[in-house]
Length: 513
Image 1 (cartoon, helix red, strand yellow):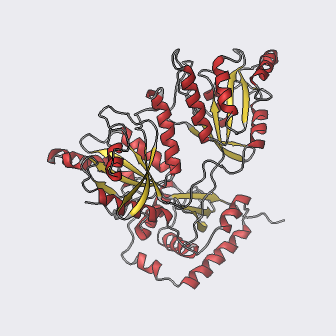
Image 2: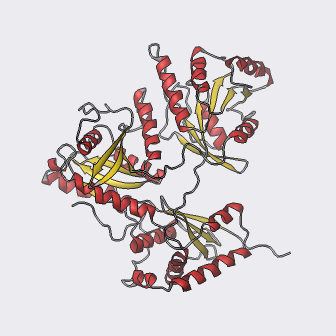
Image 3: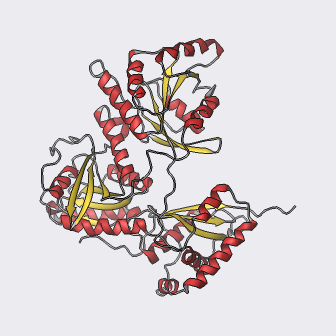
């Protein structure tokens, strides 16, 4: 089987408790008069004028279009990297900025987390924070380790927040990081942490010696000075990221993901027809992403072979931690991810976590089941049940059964990639989308909650890559109802190989004077 064409999947794998569509539903939507649905959509859009709308609402609505060839992108949030030695309070500072305990905080230096990216908000500005904790300097390779972390942090960020323990003062390690940061040409801010009261402020003043400008005294523990620091940072941070934005044009970009030793390098080598990257039975021999232009099926692709992602980030010390960060960076630059799964072993938590990483990134997805030539009948029996149980939330992803080592069925990867990318690029005309919503809500209205029934006022596809839909509503839609809409979108338009994002904007009517 080259790839499966699922019939009635939904985005989460959970049941939405609504019956399947009638056989002629898709044909009925498709046959609607284009001019008529556009007129109805315009009428719904004008009806929103009676509701309290924000500037962001108006920006979304300005992109509502019936031109299916128009591709738009939601702007990427600016990225702030937080760097510093272990145990200076980076994670505590992240939690303080977030306003909740999300990053793991322990007294043990170098404790790392499953997630290194967080969405922050301050003064109506939203931004992404990258916590680069996790490295443990040692007596031998401290300079190399610190330099590599600083390099990665700068590579992924629009600006850098350098955190120093004011009570310890500037160390040789801090000075080494500073030399790296000065070469970055990125804005660098210096946070003098652990200044819990006015008596410790002279300790922060001593950090002028680092040459990064004025140290900002803060206390991640008590919140002292954090608001002023954020005001300074956001005044310099761009509105839209200059590093996280998507490349446009050129060969389609494919990230090869998978846990260590699953066969990623073998796949790239077989596709390239040469020993492009190291292949070794020792897990994790690939450290950095390697770009390779490869021609398969008469088309040129740009493949990125990424270092294997280990089971939990806190197990990834040293080079493995940097490899995980670079894997995240490679996924950010990719358009579609091929997640490789070793069929000779049970599907693991690692496999599912990697797939979820792709879903969070919004990239198109293809599942490559590797070592298919080694699959026994007994193992096949259990594999199908593992797929049904553990991968139920991505039944919409094209599936390829191949052998990276022998090249068997490698050519079947191309139609799967093309299908996923076509879905990722798909745009539904605003008129057709609102006609679909009208049909769905008429046949299956949202349940009444608390004596009120939420209504969908207007819907539009705000972006493609991935398909992102925004619903303007009079109330909060249940998760099950949103899954119902997502499932129907897949049934009618396919969307095979791409996540679908459905956002809500609950709005109230304007108050009459």
